[in-house]
Structure formats: C-alpha cells, structure tokens
Image 1 (cartoon, rainbow over the protein chains, first blue to last red):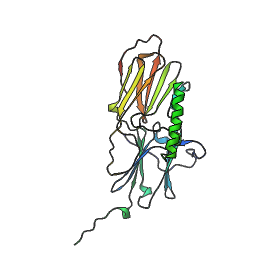
Image 2: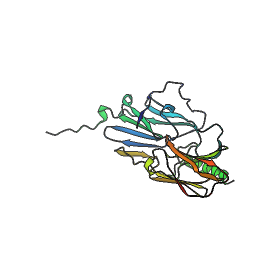
Image 3: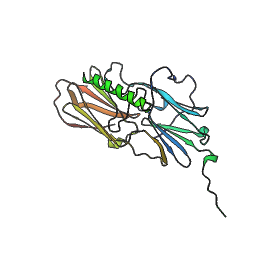
Image 4: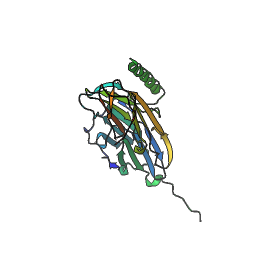
Length: 127
Length: 138
C-alpha cells in the first residue's frame, strides 16, 4: 500500500545537515515518455521523516534516519549509522515540479515528475 | 577485535568511493549481495537489523542454526518502465550470516520488516540447545 508524502517541507521541520556528516542515498532515475521517476533507498525512514523541496531548479531530498530501538540497546557492531541524509538534483525546464507526486513504501521513496507539455514528443503527421 | 578491523576497512572503502565520486560521505554502501547489518544487545536479547529497502516480503528466508542467524531475500523487480538513466539501488538477491555471541533461545526469535529494515530479535538464554528452526517474517 503506497502512502502519500507531503511535498513541501515547512522550513524548520527537518534539520538541514550542512556542517554534520550526512549520507547520500542511492537512487535510480528512470525516464519515460511522460516523466521522470526517481527512486531513493531510504531504509528505516518513514514518510514523516522525509522533506522534499523543489526551488531554484533544484530538487532536494533530505531528512534523518532515527533509531527505533529500545533505550537500553547497546550497539555491538554497526555498518549503517543513524543520521541525516541529503541529495540534490538539478531540474530542467522539461519537468513540471508543481505536479510532482511522491510516495513511500518499504524504505523506498518514489518521486514522479511529469514532463511539461513542451518536453513531450509530439508526433507530427505528414500529410 | 575483528569488528574494529571491519570498521577500518569500511572507512578505507568509503574513502576510495568518495575519491572515485561515488558520493557516500559515511553511509552504507550497497554491495548488492550484502546489505548493511547492525547488531545491538540488551540484557534480554540480541537485535540484528538488516537494511534492505524495496525487498519482496515473499522471498525472505530467516533461519537460525547452531548460533548463526541467516538472512536471505530478494529485492522487488523494478516496476517502472522507461530508460534507466541512473542505477544505484540494490537489486537481485541478498544474503547475510551473523554469528551471535551467546546462546539464544531458538523459540524466542522474531523478525519483522518495516520501512525497508528487517529486524530480528533473539532472546538470550544460557541453556539453549543448538537447533535449526525456520523463522517467519511478519
């Protein structure tokens, strides 16, 4: 079951990681005729902990991975630390960021940016 | 301890990746077959987390044999059609085996999968007999 994600973060919702270590989530980017799909691997993250902003031609995905473990759990061996994540993408004019759709399932964020009308290939019939 | 050696190797590898432009400041590197694992301990149990975002629940195989916890599964097939411009997400099958330091009660092992993380909790007991069991993932 897919869950909708809020599109615009209110400033101050999520701390922007600028001077702290953060990780860059893995993505797949797929281009189809009607738009661009971005899949981001965000294990341990639910939709309330992701913020998406699209301004100045840049799409940013950021947030924080929080531990859901009991207080008395001691770390014995850690390969994946909790912390902030952040990744930005340049957006061209050919995608319509106003119509971006976002959803999250099993730690995978899925963004769909439809191509604006002028970017779609229009087949012209030769009479 | 061996665990500290792995962390040093991870740091070296992340350093290489960064210089090659892979872009991971410090976070998990998906080796495809080996998803990142964390091990925690409370007085009552061990908690093992395996990061596998986008895995197919039907394919999970979690089992415990003679002190070793085995986690296997497969990622869901990509469902989005189009031209793959960038491909970094883990795909295919994954597998990790984790040796738990102390005896655990094979009947006290539970696993669940939430937000792309498989969490296995194993209750500790000194009297546990080694035994192979299948663990259902909820």
